Length: 95
Image 1 (tube, helix red, strand yellow):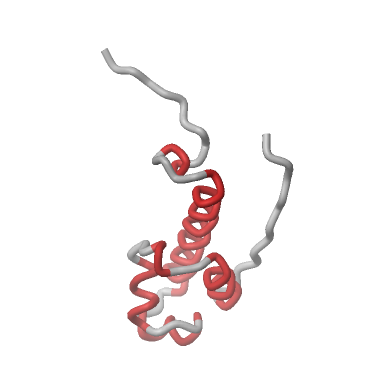
Image 2 (cartoon, rainbow, N blue to C red):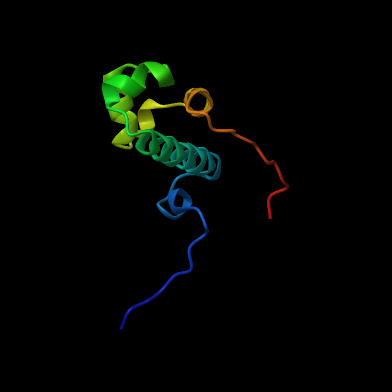
């Protein structure tokens, strides 16, 4: 018989990361996905898109491969802005 456990809503928290680190990873992963979507919509090669995003081609490749440990939240906000994305931060009291 299978046992189910309800998730916390943050896969990183469920994987055992501390609360603060899990929230940071969740934000970074969301930004990385949005940046990848913006890149895909442009239909550019990595070599063409990298300078537009303020990255080298190898660094863009790392972002597209999801190497989250190589990117800070601050760096991803900057890349997202260069990709034409509007990044907003909402802060609320924790439940």
